[in-house]
Image (cartoon, rainbow, N blue to C red; front, side, top):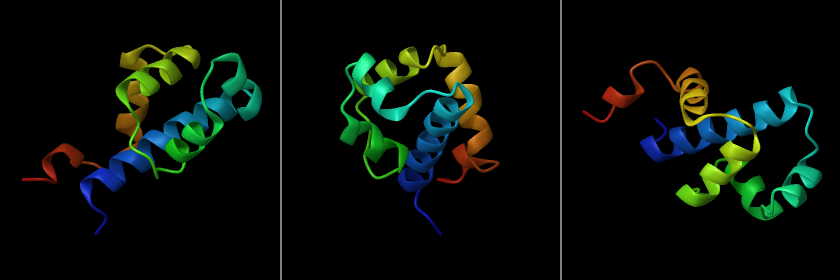
Length: 87
């Protein structure tokens, strides 16, 4: 079974990737306009990099999402009972 961090990181990456697609935002242009490293965003989207909170908040804001909206989207990407899986 995948570990907790891996599941969470991949879900965060899917939410960001889905929002870029849904809003028809070009990856390179999004990074440039929002001063986000392409490498950093790519690694976050692939679930291979733990996002610093500051980077994650910058990405969420740049996508025009509230933290509540991002949390709701993330909740949909996570397996049921995810928070209870560590017990």
